[in-house]
Length: 406
Ligand SMILES: Cc1cc2nc3c(=O)[nH]c(=O)nc-3n(C[C@H](O)[C@H](O)[C@H](O)COP(=O)(O)O)c2cc1C
Ligand code: SF4
View 1 (cartoon, helix red, strand yellow):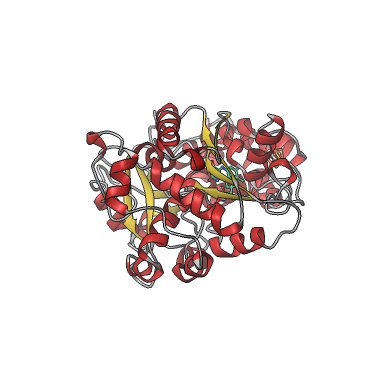
View 2 (tube, rainbow, N blue to C red):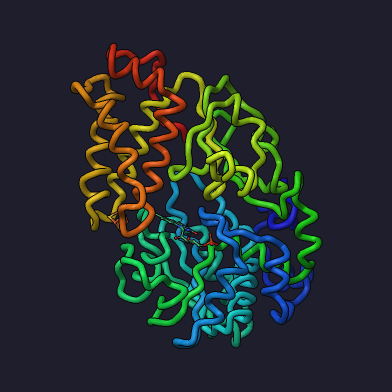
């Protein structure tokens, strides 16, 4: 499904050149009045937290300590997501347009394009796209390749890497919008968010709002994986149901008891409750869910939710920056206990400890890494409660499990 961001020539025709991009969409419009238009469009950040974009732009523009910088975040460390790298590969000039417009709107000159080092295709396309831009724009753009690590895309880690070559989160305050790259106010915005800006600036907020359904605004990129024919990137009308999104991805290939919504920082939802959910930040938030970075992973029949959860926790514990107690000790201990439960080797009290500790992790680290893990675990303990008890009490798994979700 290609509605707005992915509309235009299909990927098989190769990367869209700058001249073709301009012929198709017109020249870069001025950024005057853009913040108001972005506000009316109700655009939210697409990197995970769905923060209102215009609010962040106003905060950056109102800072007095130095000329702002824009950091386009294409780190995409989430293992289940493909959207940012594929967007950069397919529509690099939309991302660059959005970054330039954001810079013009907040009074920034310099732009850092921060791309995950393992996204080789995206790095190549972005490099070529930068080289095609006029000299005045090229001079403002700097491509930085981000270390391959889950926390590299966290905004303070990204700023830390650009400043000092260390992709680890730093304590806040100051937040990047106050003091970021070179100590200057820095607008950190996900690359998909910026690509939406490029279209809103051209076609207007009313047009953008009209793309949403069920009261939502605009479109959003979703990576659908798990029990579907293949992991696929789709663009959906924001507000579409999860069932519709899965159907666009080719439909489910097996029965499924649960869906992981939002990726490793998201949460498990029982399939029965999941299919009718409207994929939009506010209605999801009211139900305690999040679209996160746009991941829908359908758990195939034959996979055990307890084992999948333990595997994800082990990954998150390993990927922590090990700078704060909650990650270094708490997340590691939870992951170890969850691993024992999953592996049918639990020791007395493991399940009770995991339940208790999950409530103690959130809000305790320098960054939101442990919060994400705690949310995922809490959802798993709810959705797979029977299976957790079976594993822990009877040392039995009701499902034969051999592979990961995606
Ligand atoms: C552990 C962790 C990893 C993150 N990784 C990414 C990432 O890879 N890409 C991204 O855009 N945002 C990531 N974020 C969110 C960023 O900190 C930041 O909120 C985002 O880039 C802001 O852009 P947005 O408002 O357009 O979403 C991560 C956050 C956390 C806590
Ligand atoms: S909370 Fe975890 S990931 Fe975040 S800075 Fe502390 S140790 Fe690193």
